Length: 254
Length: 378
Ligand SMILES: Nc1ncnc2c1ncn2[C@@H]1O[C@H](COP(=O)(O)OP(=O)(O)OP(=O)(O)O)[C@@H](O)[C@H]1O
Ligand SMILES: [Mg+2]
Image 1 (tube, rainbow over the protein chains, first blue to last red):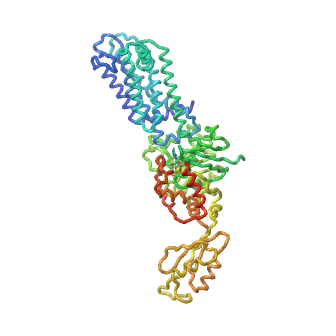
Image 2 (tube, rainbow over the protein chains, first blue to last red; image 1 turned 135 degrees about the vertical axis):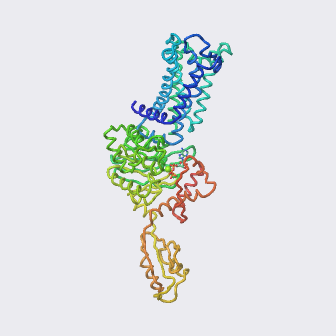
């Protein structure tokens, strides 16, 4: 346990010593703000999103439909790409692993570090509802229920996505390759959700909404805590951690 | 296995795909020994060390470190080790002090122990000036020093160092080897290197590997004697410029001297050494158990030549190393030696051109042919 924390702390420090974390977090916050306030009706991955000013309701719906998309295509690939790929590429993994640490502790430490970075970003997005509905502005009485459930959904969504990112990072020695693999697969998992409406239910529709991160996440954004979705996201996270662990171990037998 | 065997390797083999990097390597290292692990590029030194540190697993055989099996108890193995991988791969974005603290944290050193150990390793490795610097800004030599420092930080009973001195300047090298000797009395050190002088300076014992096999293992004196050859250097005056010639008869010709020396009983090989025009200098090789000096002296007196120099020495470690590993080198210089083709992962910066000797060694060639045969099969 202690080793996990030591490894995670080192990774976090490295993350925040480089501009990547700041660029990603700052960029995401900025983009989020622009999208919430400025853009009129548009669609992100097929989901219609209204500009904030055109909807006379006090909700944060826009933010919670945008967040997973931004996390998928920008934040998580950039944060997880270096986790293991760069260490393998530069050889630092050899020194890390020959310390008295278990392979599983290395994986969990890396996961914890990347996940913490995402949590920091999510915590910072809280500034938007606060700024809009508490202080300095007060656009009305916000129903905070869906906000908290939305954040909960984002946490589970991020756990699964960070897991996948870490997995791709463990499979290659190049962080660029890891970045694109993660981006493509997260985008695919997100974007197939809206396709449900195209195929109109049925087995295929069920299958799609079963695996799509977007459909799984939807209910959270609407204020529901879907237990099956929780189980799904946690399973994806665990499975990808297991694959990362195996892939790290496989160096022994190459 | 006695308690004092700190590193034990038995029939260690490692295949990378169809390439056999280690082939039944056996050795033991006891407490208090400093062992030099020698071999040409690609011989399998780093591979062996990676197995001992549980970074990779052997394909066959067993290894124990401090009594713990590398398969069953990798954590205990690593706890007893300080390890410096080749080329010291460090986290570049950390400062030296941060890195040392990170290593100490993973070794579970408490704060006061860390401070005390840090002071000592900083002194030994000469890091005082760079403690606050980011590792990315350090020169290669300093990075290597940091790598050494992290291997020493927890004062481990066993040190495994992969080319620890390759980038160090002579002062630091000497300092470090001194330190090794000093701590080595109660610890076990295994260090790989290409620098034979270093082995002579710091190790009492050497293990020489070549093409994945141990070709020599023992105290340096024994290894030196292993080839069973002795070398003589003979210099005969060739011309007397500006001085009176003290010999009998005419000044000798080169071929005359060479023929005569070659005819002496017991001489296996005569080679000319480069000199100026004042002397003929030859190198003779003989079996170890005879001393040719009386014969040589008598021959020279009989001929009436003027002897300028005559000495006898056992082969240097370098000669032995070359003769034991010469097969590798020769194959490296032939196109089509396919086994070497998958070297791309491990291309080294340190080109060791000293290895290119071309002394023939009949005794080795049988061994070599066997290896060639093995290789062709794979
Ligand atoms: N991961 C790997 N995959 C494939 N082959 C490998 C791998 N690691 C090492 N080898 C091969 O194993 C052989 C031994 O390599 P090793 O690194 O142990 O040599 P070495 O004795 O340390 O050489 P050097 O003096 O150049 O450091 C080499 O031929 C190398 O190409
Ligand atoms: Mg090596």
